[in-house]
Amino acid sequence: MFNRSYIKNLAKQRMSGRMGSAIAVALLSILLSGSVSGGFQFRFNQDDGYFSEIAIAMLPIMVFLGIFGLAYTILVGNVISIGARGWFLRYWRGENVPVGEMFSGFKHFSAFVTTGLLRGIYVFLWTLLFIIPGIVMSYAYSMTDYIICEYPHLSASQAINLSKRMTYGHKADLFVFDLSYFGWTMLSVITCMVVGIVYVFPYQYTAHAGVYEALKYDALQRGVLRPEDFGMVAPPPPPNYGG
Image (cartoon, rainbow, N blue to C red; front, side, top):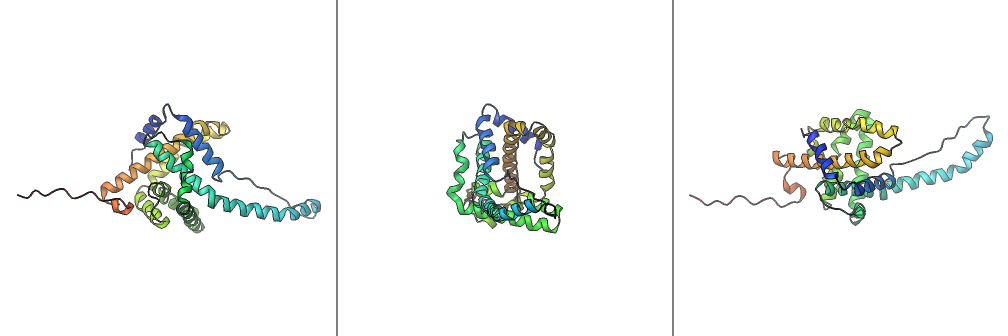
C-alpha cells in the first residue's frame, strides 16, 4: 500500500509557485485528447416526417464525423493524453518542463498510438464481460502511459504487462485514491469545471504521477519487477574482496 496522504501533500508542494504550466497542460490535454465530445439526437416517428428527412440527409455527415472522431482519438488524442502523463511525471520530479513538451509523444508516434489503442481495446473487452471487470482492469493498466513515456523502446504489450505487475495488489488502493477526490470533483461540477481546471485536475494528475513513482519503486524493491524489465542496466554486483 502506498501512502496516499503523503503523496497528495507532496503533490501540493510540487505545485507550489508553479501552477501556471500545470493548468495549461491539464486544460490542453482535456481539450485536445478527445475527452470532450458531443452528439446529436433525432426522433423518428410518423409525425416527424420533415425532421426525419433532415436526419436522413445528415446521416452521411454524422457517420463521417463519427469516423473522424474515432480516428482523431486513436491517432492524435492518445498521443496527447499519454504525452501529458509524461509531462506530469517530469513535473512531479521537480523539473521545469515547457508546456510544449506535452506534445513530445509525437516523436514516438507509433509506440504511443499502439499503446493507447491496445489498452483501450483490452478495457473495452473486459467491460463487455461486465462493468466491474472493466473497472478493475482499467486500474491494472493505469500505469501504462507513464511506462511507455519513460521507456518508449518497450512494446505496447510489454508496457501493459509491466503495469499489470506493478499494480498487482494495489487496485483497491488506486480506487481509494481516486475516491479521495470525490469532494473536489463535486466542487468542480458545481463551479462548471472552473475549480477543476484551475486546481483539481493539475493536482490530481501530479499526485497520480507520484503514485506511479511509488508503485514502481515498491515493485523494484520487492523484486516484482527488475531493472531489466524496463530495459535498464542492472546494477553490478558488489565487489568481492575475498578473505
